[in-house]
Length: 119
Image 1 (tube, rainbow, N blue to C red):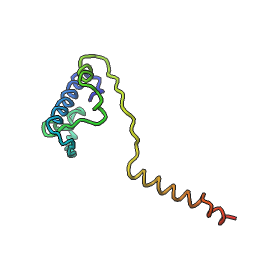
Image 2: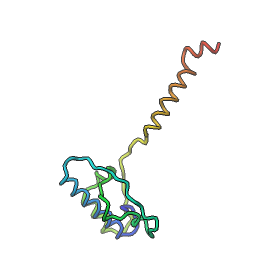
Image 3: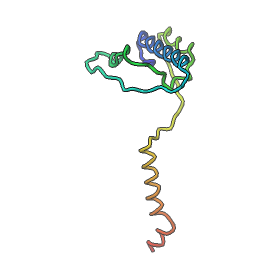
Image 4: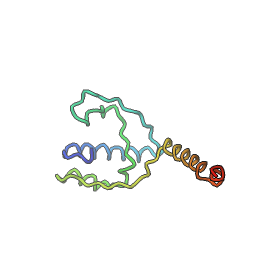
């Protein structure tokens, strides 16, 4: 929503983010429980897919570094906002498991003992 070309959608996103930040400071335990929201597949726009009144909005880790002033500036400008994000490794547990299996298989084929078996 922050990257939407429509100004009123960006304003809505900023309100949700600032509200989430305010709730985070009031609730100091640091952990948030994620519940999968129910989707309205009859929605005309993507912002209506979720009933925002029944959903607890939490701040995304990707946007924590964006200052409040910069968020508000995104609402006032008519230009498309340019956002930069930190780079994160994209490795899930299943990918790590596959890397381990492939490494083990490669060692059996490429190891010293396997070369002796070939000759």
